[in-house]
Length: 180
Picture (cartoon, rainbow, N blue to C red):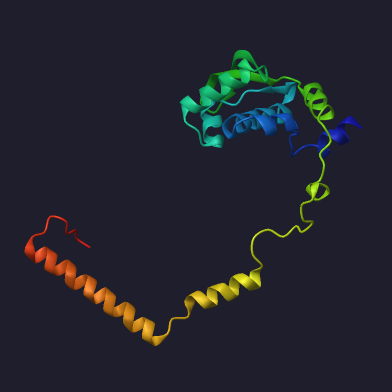
């Protein structure tokens, strides 16, 4: 039974809502990577190198250190210490981390939250539509694209006059003239 469950849960990690709602993107990303590694590898410990974490998260060393410090100081992960692991290039000393169980905190936080009242019970419209209907947007785009021949001539005339004015200012050496 346990082996079947482990196979079923092989390619995902559960993240408490409390973390999703309260951590920055960098902190949540790092927590997720550590959570993933502790589930994939035996012993519930993460032994990904800083270089691997920086690469996966697309973070610099300073940002990674800041996120690690934050998660450790908030007791969301434990820093176990350095251990040697065997790599293609020999033994490498890597910092090991484990996840702190915060499921009780998460559950108590959300069970104690007041029940939300839907907006339409407070007098708001029941419509779920957001923004503009696609057909209205297409009509608007059609209207914006239609330029009459007279307007086109007017635009060309204004552009020509503007270029003439710029040329005149350049020839007079006006300090306000800029290269177009």
